[in-house]
Image 1 (cartoon, helix red, strand yellow):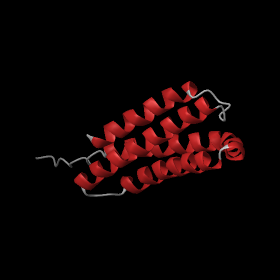
Image 2 (image 1 turned 120 degrees about the vertical axis):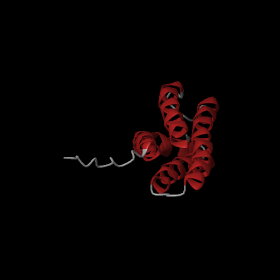
Image 3 (image 1 turned 135 degrees about the vertical axis):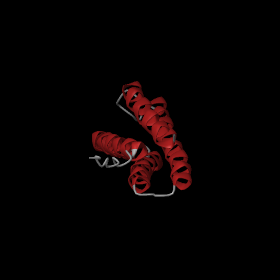
Image 4 (image 1 turned 180 degrees about the horizontal axis):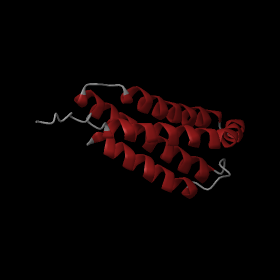
Length: 123
């Protein structure tokens, strides 16, 4: 008697990492909502820039989850990494300008986690 061995479905590590990025970015965006409104009162251009970068990072992660082509996904992850760095830099800039009440260092750990997940999605 021979037993049939059924192949397990291949685990989508990159997709899982992108889900984490999407959720973490969304949570960060929700958390920063009031802060971005205050930034908009003092520096509207910076607020728009930060909001756009957050939104683009979240949407990039969401869109890349379903991308079947590995090379296109890797290229898209590189773009998502750029958006993450834009958000991080924007928060530091807003803090340096004195228009951000929150401490940008409080977000460093979150961005480190987001960047680590993006790197995981890239490999």
